[in-house]
Image (cartoon, rainbow, N blue to C red; front, side, top):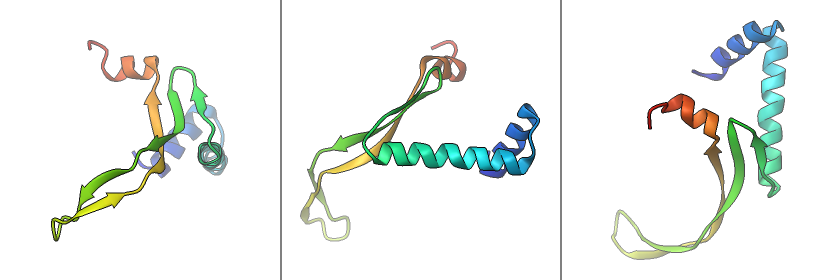
Length: 93
């Protein structure tokens, strides 16, 4: 499902126009990006949590030459699915 299809489903489930649904979806995603990039966590009970995580520096290899190189530490976005989401995707596990 792409964004346009998601907007269509949101519009039909909430009885708003597609334009309003697109505006709401864009506001939600922009807000999550802003909050997580600012170092905070966004938790949606039952759905999951978005948070920044620290990835430590490590040694890697250049795939072309095979020589060792240092990969610097960085901060990355992460998503952890909530219990209801996990149970819906894999109900028998």
